[in-house]
Length: 345
Image: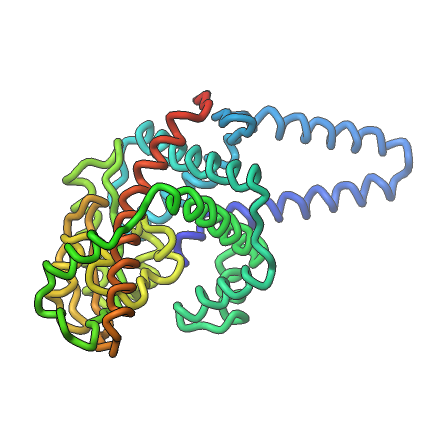
């Protein structure tokens, strides 16, 4: 919630300016029509000034990213860093890193529009309710918190809609690139002798914070950031809040870091090994995987009774999910390389 303070301050200042301008306009109208052209001239000047202040910072295929959008995103990132007491890369590197993420998002949203994908209001409301519940709130309480932070529920709804559209695109594209055959299932089961012939499956409900390595965040910086997140959690801070501030896994971060129930083989080996070694309620040290550094917490475990057929299906789905996660990063690099991108910083 503290991450929104910069935006809230900016909104309050803007509102104050509008109120002031509205008061002056009322005075001018009260003194006679002769002063109206002066007010119109002032409005035109302000409009022109706003246009001059904003500019295109990136052309992405047939779309653009504006300086105002980049500035808002940067303010959000900087406020997060300030709230967590962390260090950011040099300003030039930070701008490039944030803009690069916005470029990849824009490409995916363009693909969603080209495919005529949409998110209906019922589905969107269901997702918002899930986010609220994962943070221990009703939807009304969630709306109150959002507004108290200077945002509007409408803007949050739009951001969630964008995330859901990108997820639809990812699912469509990645499902065509990943396959699992019976040999893959047999190989996995042969590596899990303790589960062969058993009529149950061990499942773990976990949540995590992921800190990715990027061109502007090296190994040491990523690990340090993950350690900062872990320290915050050890000090008793709310996991959902820390996940929203720190985690680069935006899908789970919106749900407080929750991964839901995870079956064997569903996550990459480094993550699964670390998760398996944790006791319920225990927090891991930063765990390195191909995606970056994870801080993992196990919430609970259970045994699910399964038939041999359903067990094989669970293994198939777990392998598919793991490969899909790996393929997503490859695909995002590919669409970035194939797109026309003109950076104008």
